[in-house]
Image (cartoon, rainbow, N blue to C red):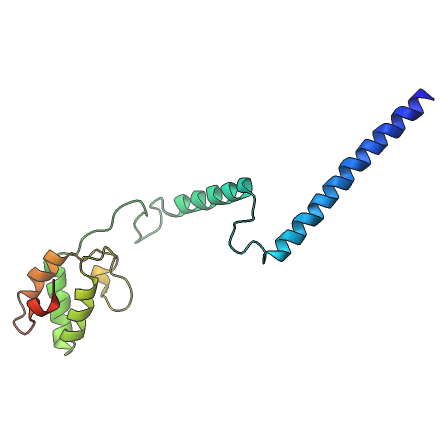
Length: 152
């Protein structure tokens, strides 16, 4: 009689635990659907979010360990474009009769802290910072450009 009561209580406790677990899982899925699959990440549990960020940072560090050809690691600051590189780029633009648009693009990028990327810039300056001083020095060699109007 005693062992039967013990088995009954043990089974009852196990069913309560399983029922609560299933109920919590169903509630979790309901919240997941209701919030648009945690689109903003606010509803996701912190442990899972920390785990995801650790995995992402681990993958990023593996990718940027310097083994990829032609790419610098992400922890190094970008190089600064020299006045000679900018002069060469402006001379190429002048030969194509596109000096004014090139000067406008460079003037808008100068001093912003953004790196030069995209098809507007040649490969030798891709990923480099553009400083105002270097641009002023390069533009000084072009008499047809008025540096004062550019507000550098």
